[in-house]
Each structure stands twice: as C-alpha cells, then as structure tokens.
Amino acid sequence: MSYPNTRLRRLRYNKTLREMVEDVHLRVEDFIFPVFVCEGSNIKREVSSMPGQYQFSIDKLPDLFKQIISKGIKSILLFGVPIGKDEEGLVSCDDNGIVQNAIKFIKKEYPEILLIVDLCNCQYTTHGHCGTLVDDDVHNDKTLVNLSKQALSLVKAGADILAPSDMMDGRVLHIRQSLDKNGYEKTPIFSYSIKYASAFYGPFRDAANNSPKLGDRKSYQMNFKNSIEAIREAESDIKEGADAIIIKPALSYLDIINKIKSKFNIPIIAYNVSGEYSMVAAASEREWVDRLDITLEILMSMKRAGATAIITYHALEIADKIKNNV
Image (cartoon, rainbow, N blue to C red; front, side, top):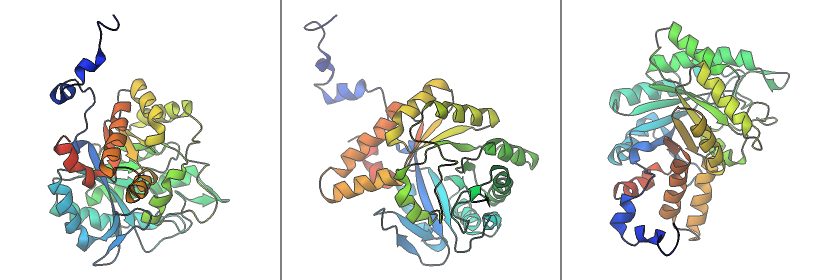
C-alpha cells in the first residue's frame, strides 16, 4: 500500500504518538562513565584535549562520585595514571598500586557502583605499548602472563568486572583460566574484542599518559579498513569466555556494532571514544552545533546500531536530558 492511503507522517504529528512508536531507547542506566585516577593528593587536573574531563587523585573522587550518583549513573570504567612505570608494566600488579587503592576506596564508599576496570599495560610501561617488547614488537604470550597477574591483583582489590583492552591473541582464555583457578569464576570479562588502530584515540592518550614512545599499535590493534576480521575477533573471545564485547571506537564503526549484534547473542558495549567527544566539544564551543542535541543523536545512533550499553565521557552532561525525555 502506498500514498495516499499510506502517509507515514501520520505517526509524527503528535509528540506523545512519536514517543509511543519509538523503537530505540536510551537510558541513563545504559551509560558507563570513564574515570581517570592519578597518584598524589588534592588533584583535579583537566585533560587539555578533553575539556570537562579530569584526572582525579583518590581523595578528590568524592566530588566526582557525588555527581555520578546524583545523575543516576550506575557504572564506571576505571583507568589508572601511575607515576612509576617499568619495561614490562609489572607495576600494574602492585596490590597497593594506584588503581588497586582506588578500587578499594570506591568499593568501600560507593558499593552500589558497578566497577569495571580497564586491564592493560600501556599506562604502566615506560615505552607506552600494551605489553612486553621483544625486538621492538609486543610479544603476545609474554604479555599474557603479565595480564593474568594484573587481573588477579585487580579482582583481589575488589573489581566487579575486568575489561582487557590490549588486543593480544588468547588473553581472554588466559585471564579466564587464571581467575577460575583462583576462585574468581563469578567475575565477568568484558573484552575489548574489537579495538581498531584509530586516530580517534589521541585525546585519551593525554588523559591516560600512555602514548607509545616508539612506533605504533598497528601490529596488535585492528586495521580500520577491515570488517570481516571483527567477526573472527568477537567469535574467538566469546569462545574463550568473554561475557560481553566492547567495540572501540563507536561512531565511525556503527556497521561493526550492527554486524556483531546480528551475528552473536551477547551484550555489545560501544565505546564513544575521546576523539569523538573532543570533536563535539570543539564544535559546540564555536557554536557550530548544539552540544546536547548532537550528543543525544550520536549516542542514540549507537543504540540503534545494536549497542546494549555505551562507555561515554558525555554521561554526566547528557543524563538530565535523557531522564527528562527532552
């Protein structure tokens, strides 16, 4: 049936009717807010390339968590910014390290918050790569050993969920076996199964202080020209025991989110990354776009593509708009 019998605009004239027939929904509960914790005291340091985002010392976290809880956000993704680093990133396994101490503080003071912890070596290595270097390349299997040690240290501190972001082959299986062997079989793994070697990560490297000192990460992160490879990566991690799949970046990779959602019956988490955030911030500062409107549209596109949840730096600013259904 076609025009004039069918007029699709009939469902658009009335606001209540438009809301009634919406088929994609975005909730504050869908958001995971990234938090950067640094060593020291009385520190709230703005990330210059990410206006409105900060590194916090542990004693300044209450200021942030007051906002997080008041906005109705229930989940965070924790990153550590240590002072001390070493060649293999073994400082990440220190039970009194910056992330471990932050985990203990958060779980004591804010037990209602779901605490997802990034699991990687790039913030902890002197060279800035995500694992142990051998002949100027990241050695896959040596890195797996360190990642498993780091995983155990994080869950002992109280991490609810681990999110390995290194892109080493076999790391989900290695971490899963290590957790299970040590009595942490209930701890979920949210794997960065599909993490592209992307130019969208630039601002994040300012926030996490993890820029590689030599070369790039193209030998382990995915080629952004590829899509079929993403299916293989997701399938491999699922078979190894991943409980959810993180896809990073999100905005330019909505097709990948949709492919994985269509192929696998598993939660998909889209990472609305730093470069995406900073582009919106820069354009809105110049009044080229309405910041909240364009943010809502971007986040909704990720849900429409198939994302179950979204890691986003916009969570605090967009929460009220979502709750008020504006």
